[in-house]
Image 1: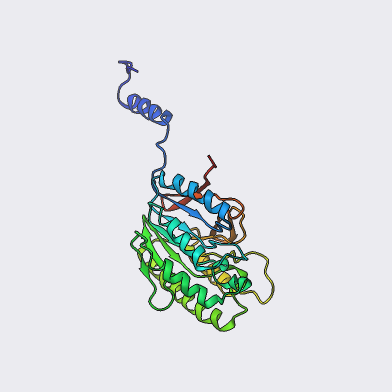
Image 2: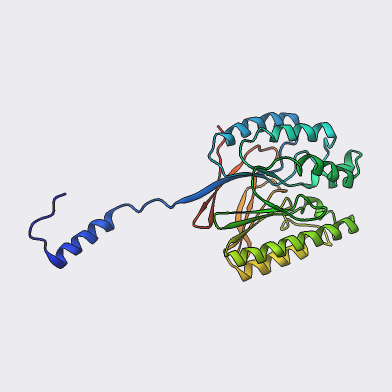
Length: 285
């Protein structure tokens, strides 16, 4: 609109400020978006639905896709044929893809006649060697599933912490693995502080679900609480396990995201906006 000629000096400045104040604010800039899912497929029917979900994700401009674990049900199948079929299926994802092991993938395979350590070893031969197409660092040693990478001010760290009480029933396996877990978590937390990045912890188990005693997640919960207290609002946790979408704060300063799970074959879109996460369930077509 043309300015009245009589506006001069301070009046003109005031007019321009008023007009600027009426203008809509520009939308918050999204640095990138990524997908989170887990606890699927539990059956061949769900595997068929997962193909459609992969097609949907492939059509999105995603930086990467993270599956938080459980690619079979608690009673299997745990055999090589099922795992190899999942490797081929996830090979269809066009984005960088990261997969974590869940309890159904190894610790619970004793229910269908397999030895859990042997199943975890098989999982590693299939999925630790699968090209991830994302530049990440892998923890040295046996736990090749422990990886981390940075993107737009966030450091993502993946940990092998499964459901079924963190396999506490096998005391020696649990102790060895959790030593590696805490070493990887600690070095990642130091790196995030040094880089001034937010920390995003990725694992399968819901450590806050009601558990039998002793609690296989007690030490992890304590450490997450300390990290969140040191850097409130800059520590995030993403997990699966109990199949319920959650976006809450189970510990002061800790933002927690839980993905959908069987029988729902769905995914979450997480968008990074000014180093914060905006999470939304993607509606089914």
